[in-house]
Length: 164
Image 1 (cartoon, rainbow, N blue to C red):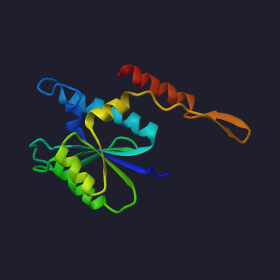
Image 2: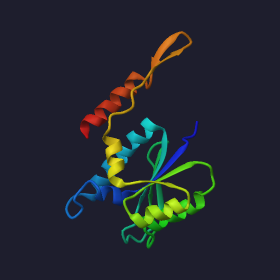
Image 3: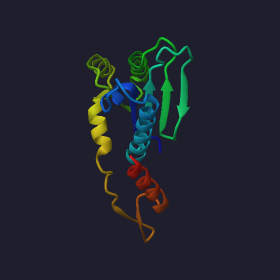
Image 4: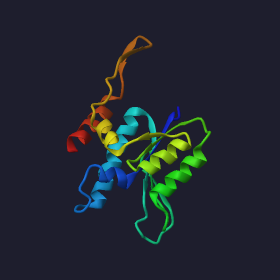
């Protein structure tokens, strides 16, 4: 079943909402954001695109598939994440899939809303990712009780969360 929600994240805007960007390790922050969004997207069954500016690197737009639900885009030279997200919203309009744009840039969320997308602030996303995962309810399947994810995957997720 394909995710019913597509979330487009302004990567550096979200990073700036958590860390002091005047000093630090951008590569580490990108990796931490990507890992947090992988967990969040898996738990909530959301397709997530994380958009990072090219930062004056002379390169073409590149995409990296991290998981089945998370893809990372580095925009091409001269294209900001804001401009990319605006174009994305315009192309996505009318497709019938719920679209959420994550940024704290007021102009960006107003533009996204104009295209019918929802908006979530960067601090609100961090807060949502920090909340405990939804409780799994016991389901009866062919006379057997089953709880959410397999035990091995639950243990792996627990280990990842402990590292954060």
